[in-house]
Amino acid sequence: MENMAQLTREELLSCLDLAKVLTSELDSEKLYGIIMKKLSEMIPATNWSLLLLNRETHELYFKITVDLKIEKMKNIRLKMGEGIAGQVALNRKPMVISNVNTSEFFNDTVDRLSGFSTKSIMCVPLIFGGRILGVIEAVNPHTLDDNALALLCIIAEYTAIAVENTERYNSIKSLSLRDDLTGLYNTRYLYQRLNKILEECRETKAHFSLIFIDIDNFKGIVDAQGHLNGSLIIHEVAQTIRAGLHEPAFAVSYGGDEFVVVLPGYDHEQVLLEAEEIRTSISQESYLSKLGLDIRLTASFGVATYPEDAKNITDLLGRADRAMFHVKHVGKNAVG
Image (cartoon, rainbow, N blue to C red):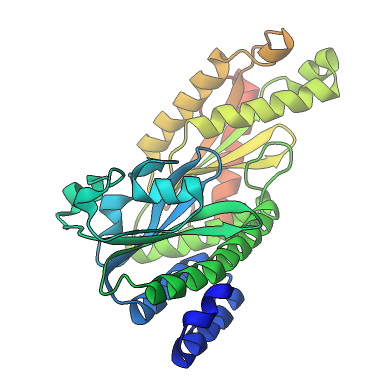
């Protein structure tokens, strides 16, 4: 870190203090709050923004801001090379713009949405292991001198390490709560979340609902198509189920050809409609089409709603499970 030679003893001590905090924090929400707080203290500016790079879309999004409402920023996406932040991410080099009106790269989208007036920007990349993770922006900083830039670059290096650490931690944590075959959550996650949802609903007197799903005649499908294709079908059905859900709803692989869908906030009428939509989606889908096959499926559904059908998790799951088995016994391909 050759930039350290430019810093005062107090600034160096602040950097070391920040490094200790950032590299020991694995809770991402706490981490980003710490970063913004420390930045505000060390390099005064009108506001700060931390933008992270989405690895799949290769677009920057606002993770956290200071003095700007994140709700207004959450839908903004910047392509690599778009705006000053996009340029910094693309070229992986800091940019200091003393007057944005003279910059060909300045994008006024944030100003128009927030009513804020950007005059100057200091922006540096977050790089770890040769990979760009995002950028940090100081908007209208009190100073734009080399010392401020050197300090921000050092902060960015420590921040990149911290962001990478939390991403790896969250990835490992997520893997422990997901089913390998389907990519859906597993039963460990199901029971963890259900207990929390139940507590919240008891306090707020809200509803939540469950859907039990079982693929009809799946043993016959496996006998005809083989176990490998049977596993591929399970994977594809999981994607069909997940495609129709919107957070905070989530789906769980319950084992074999069974799934559970959890719908916080849904009452009995709403869960019946959701189950019917999923049933229709499954019955209309052609499975294993990438292999040149056209496998058609149906599934049986059972629903249950808290608090009408049961007051605890065990009874609620049991109620939905029994409803699903009743559908199987009386004809299948329906919601019960």
